[in-house]
Image (cartoon, rainbow, N blue to C red; front, top):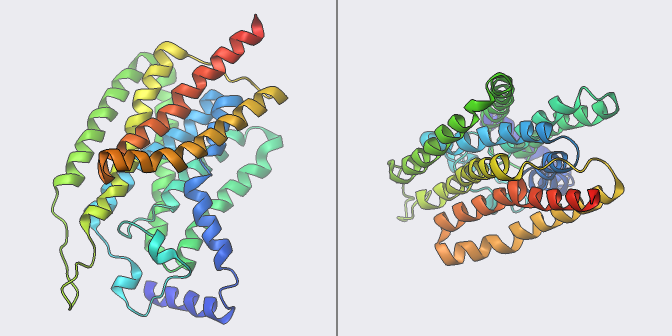
Length: 317
């Protein structure tokens, strides 16, 4: 039934000459490239706790998605059924195994986590509704492009909801027991390295085509896992540093603060675009991706907040 649904979407796609394909590709790209800028901006400029809430929901999924993907090792739809032809360049950009949808479990916690935290502000409820809709649009885009089954998307959404619930319960607990945060960070740090060891040394399917080519190279598939878990490691280190020594306060919504934070977001995008390839070249594909993820996350959780703290001090002097 899942393949039949994808074939139906494929026939629809073909009937309208791929008119919607560029938009669906943009949705998928935005979900994993630019959506994170919204909770980061909230963290920097509006409400530190609200930004952290969405980001913690996200890191929950960043840990569990690669673990699930590299445990189940489900092949992509076009490998399972040769009638499936992904739209556009999706077949080259869809890395990793299929289950669950990584795009959905990225957009989900970022969107839902942000939507939950800003809902109490009546002025922002329109944005909360848009963010919830964007989760489902992202999931649908993965089906529409032919790179994920409905089950992949459903589990990605379910995982996102669990991430938000986890963050909610964790924040409630730490409000009562703030002294326990370091323990949680330590446990998370240990789990991350256990996860890296698991995806590195576990056995993978080694299926070959009729002409002797490996259908899916496990080395390529675990590369995203190194990157995703690296983000969690980066957050844990950065959160400890920020909480212990930086302790910045958001600049709030002045024009100057918005401009400063926009500059910081531009630097964040440039960091990903230009530093990531350098790290891969220096340290290899897996470790380069992990090291970059640590640097990238450390930048927006601790390093730029230090800049904001210095700017705030300069304004008060």
